[in-house]
Image (cartoon, rainbow, N blue to C red; front, side, top):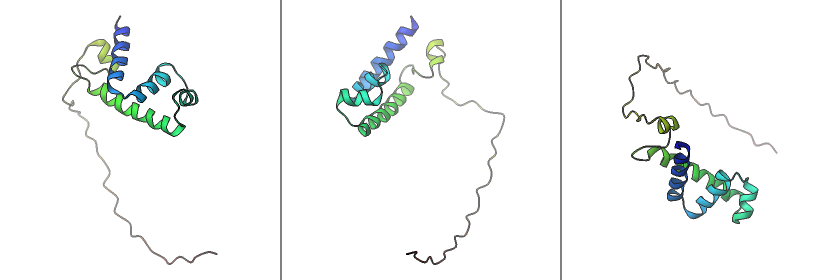
Length: 116
C-alpha cells in the first residue's frame, strides 16, 4: 500500500512541477524507459535539446522532492518509516582538520617563439 502511495506522490509532484515538454520527456524516458533516440523521434526534438531537458528535469525534481512540505519524498527511508528529518545538524566529536592553503607559486613568463 505504501509503495503505491509513493508512486502516486512521485508522479503527481512531477506533473505539477514540470512544464509540458519536460513532463512528456519524463514520462517517456524515466517512466517508460525509452532511450534518447526514441524520445527524440517521438517528441520531434534533437539530441541536444533532449539532454538539456533531462538535466533540467533532474535538477527541478531533485530540489522539489527534497524540499517538499510537510514531508519530503527523499530520503526514501524517512518516507516509508515516517521518521522526521533533523533540522539541526548533529554535533560530531571528531573535528575535521584541513591542510593549510598552498602558497601561490610565482609564475614565470618566458617569451615564446612562434613555430612556423
